Length: 169
Image 1 (cartoon, rainbow, N blue to C red):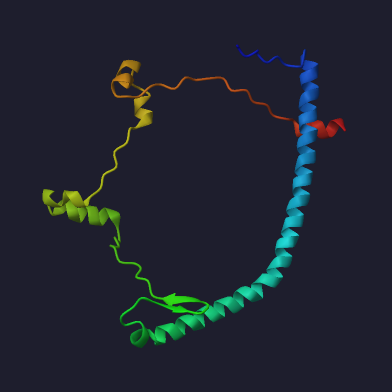
Image 2: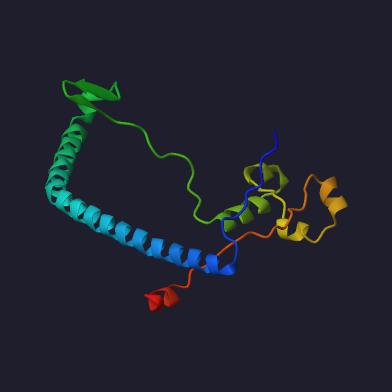
């Protein structure tokens, strides 16, 4: 069964004018409600921050002191293990970092290139099609390389004139 084509409920531009006016009025009401909600959320967030802030500061102080204590005990209690189970949690050390830090991509690449072809595998090269340049090619060429031209379409849009809307009230 074929779908029925949608038909507009508006019969002339006067009705479209009124529709745009109503859209503008609805936008204003929606924005006003959203602004109220945003104000309420901000007030709740500020009130919660008054409670949360001292708790967060206390937590941070405890974390720092636990870390200091465990680091002091690292040599004697963590010589042969990475973590320790305690009644209310677990503490330990995890290796992080490592890898290689490159101060300047350009200077490192230049230095590697200067060392010869046997070090080219240490340089990564990103290959991707240049879409702007491909736009200038004909459709047969695009098809040959696995690309295609996007069809241009007219997309409907509208803008509500808020100035005139406020003057109409």
